[in-house]
Image (cartoon, rainbow, N blue to C red):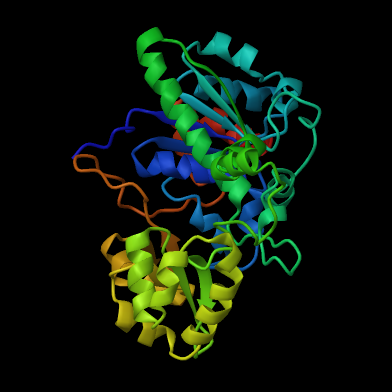
Length: 390
């Protein structure tokens, strides 16, 4: 099997979640990732909770990378950066627009040094528009995108998603942008600037919601739309043991089997009658509270779109998840006595493999070898250390 991105070198200036998640995906499929940190390291290293002396969150998005500490505010630091960039393919920047330009390292300057450079900027709001300089976290962007207002029960307040929707959708679009730009560079020999915004990425996920809004001509209501709790056939139901089931019987054939299984064949013909949904939801909920989650799963098996609502421990032990190797546990991680759980690579190929190692860089761990690869002498490297350039 081949590792397709093994000839690609990526310089990663990002920190936190979005950029590192993007570069980790590229790393999984062979790209060399050089994580450029300031001398105190990525702030995400200090997030709680810790494991083996550093943040568990940091380990979740920074496997298989090399770390170089570098002060980009100094002339020497910029000289090292430019030398490294001249032999790199991709630069990921997670700063607010204008930051790299103030350092004299904007795209217009860097592309003169490396015409084939693919410069991907991953920001909250993009490089244009009235909010381009505004600070924001995932919680802010998701709210502005209209997702938070639509998340939660209809009789409760908006809810914050457990998944960082804006940050991670932005990361995924950044991966797509880099791969498209690499493909075009094969044709033109030239790189380009990729402007990826978390807000744009989040709004793109509202495809169904925007379409329904257009057709209904009404503002969507939290927990009251066809796919968010207003349909008997597409809902969450509590069982006798306080657990929940998720039902997705949008198709008539699945709805028929479900109604027969709960002893309500009279509901089959009123499947999608809007005026009967509340009535059916209430009655179905009463029926499903009569048995445990497991009992209902044994009754229906795998015949319909019905799954248990699982906690993470149950997810990690589920045979489907184990078969796909989607939760990887590193036992006694760094001799901490604790196991580290990580998501596995999400794309499986027939003839492409991913990197199987799970190594995590310590702050500046690879600075000496990277500078040696660039041709710096031991005396020059010693001077950089003394001057706190690296």
